Length: 455
Image 1: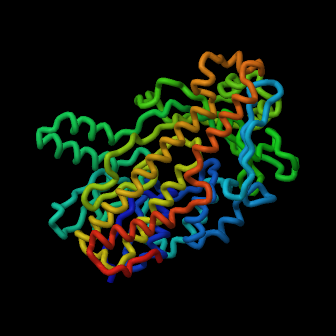
Image 2: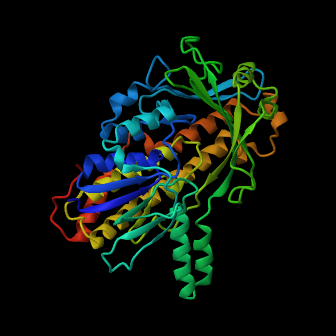
């Protein structure tokens, strides 16, 4: 008999990794996955997995399966390269080729397919189950949470995990309830702030995304046509064993951060809308853009820094908790770290009743929330650097930059050094230390013997 039941709202990457982590570390915890879509599709574009994130996937026993679909067809991971390409002859000003910073590139669909294939009991996955709301009993009660779905059905659980993405309905309901409680207590300003936390906000970034077929043996040396690296303002790397080139053409709109984006978050657009932003760039870049048969426009929205990921026995995870800009390639990885830590907290033998569960969630929130929010802030700063939107380049217009004369190599080196420094948090590190800290805090809170440890 399971010691308690977990309902996971959302079977995206974060929800699936949490299910896999429970499956490994906490087999005595029952979990059910509820996905709003009618099928678990493996569509999507590219995603880069950094070594810190790779540690989580290796701990879950996924390394062998993932290496079969990772990389550019010749190597499972690739270097990161920055190049100023908004001029006819570009300048490479930063290349990171150390093992600690090489990225494992994937087609998102390939990654999700591996995760799905490793769910041992497919009957735990329930489709067409979009969360509408939930009813949580008083914290002193041992009664279960009731999850209400849009189709009129319900499910009961001891813990509800909101892994339902940036548009998370679980987050929306959580902050509606927190705001109602604050309002009832006469704290109107706090209530207004809490209510605003339910909605995602615009990051000030639009990304045009596309995929182009590619011959993995076409070129040996990394150049923009081969693009085994990142090009300034244009992110490009091979996926699907080098057979596809993933491109994201990024446009930033300074001053619009934190606003509500009006219009659809994603939309198909003609190629001309993309190409007009890259007139005068290196010929190889323009050629790569032309090779993409179809483009989609993505408004990059983010979750503002939340005051908590937890309310009672309801908890947010991955993008539902801390969706961030993509400039450090860390968004998915932070969700995987959430999953690994929370699963190991749930695995502890003394975490069995609602009091212990609440303490475990409190520990999770105290460690994962500030760390993930710090990474989100660093990612935003990286975006400013990648687009040369810093004080050093104040007054430099796109036309001046394209001339190749107004931005010096010395200035670009400062960008490179600063950018590298913003990623110090992940160099040679893993989440293992934070898991140990979490288990120590849990032990202290529960007043138990020092036998709790990472499994």
